Length: 238
Image (cartoon, rainbow, N blue to C red; front, top):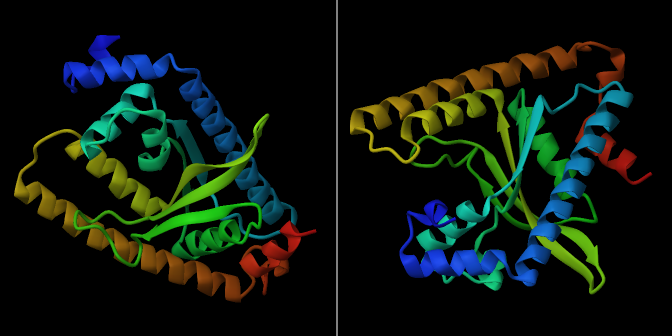
């Protein structure tokens, strides 16, 4: 409906409404859904590989979503791009998205390595906000991944954004979104958010150190000793 497009001028609203009815756009959305399903399945397989082999599982929880037509239109509008099917593919890298939340930075890094070494996937872009936080204080790892999807026209690589955060990073991001999303907030509030981000980064480092120390003395089971992402990568290739 036109209410969904109220943030845009009438020309953009009309183009978004027309885009929804195009078969080419419907096919693209179908590809995004299939790419998201395949990426989710791969994540589930990684989780099971860790579990079956007695390794501490690196994923606390997983969230996934496909952007709505309104959200896609808003993203193109904000980028100053015309609303076309090709622009959706070229300029909206996060139409399909998965968020993975880990306990520690060690888990985050291992998970990133395991995903990156999947020979079926293509890493299109990586943004390291763990070692280089955003000005706002946001931390996390963002991967834009090309996932192979097959149609009657052959194979196509469809983008899926995978965000990986620790529990502390996820807590901060949830707080920031609740306070700041589409709202004007004072500079004092933004400075407080940066301070909290710094505190949580220290907590993350402490948790990471405690878990690594525990693993070195045989955390949970002797099976965990000496097994890491390299071991899981070998299992993936079997």
